[in-house]
Length: 177
Image (cartoon, rainbow, N blue to C red; front, side, top):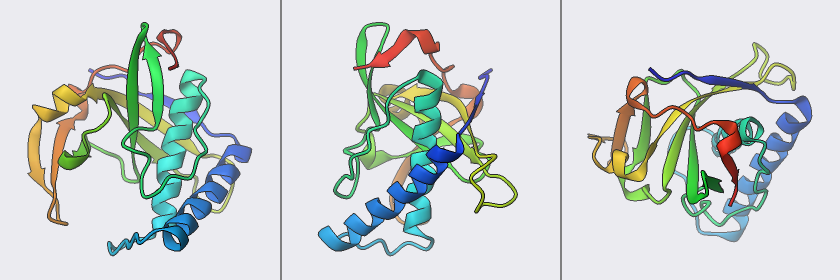
């Protein structure tokens, strides 16, 4: 059974995440030919992802990479050392309380994936009360062997139920790579 970790996000970092999400989206629109035709709000999508990264960074006392990437972050959010082994980590953050980790099959680029959930305050405009719940993770190899599910958008995902995720590594065992 996976034991989740709940991380409170300080107001100044919520504000930073909002600004960074807008800047990242503006970069996509102004500097690339990126055309996000999915339903939803791309700024909100970036905000959710950044908040998950912040939760992971706070839990492990790491620095968040504030670069604005072209289209994506190259498939990972952090380069860390886990017990002296370098790993690329990608945090997958969900808006709705998740029952599993989903990763696009064509995007299995990181070594390790962490499932996070953004727990919003009642008033999403406030800077106070934001939390991120970190559930556990899975290696790329474990995901490659996981259940294959077609998305509503025509691509394939690999998915692992929460109860089958690996426990999060101990905070003392992780440092920036």
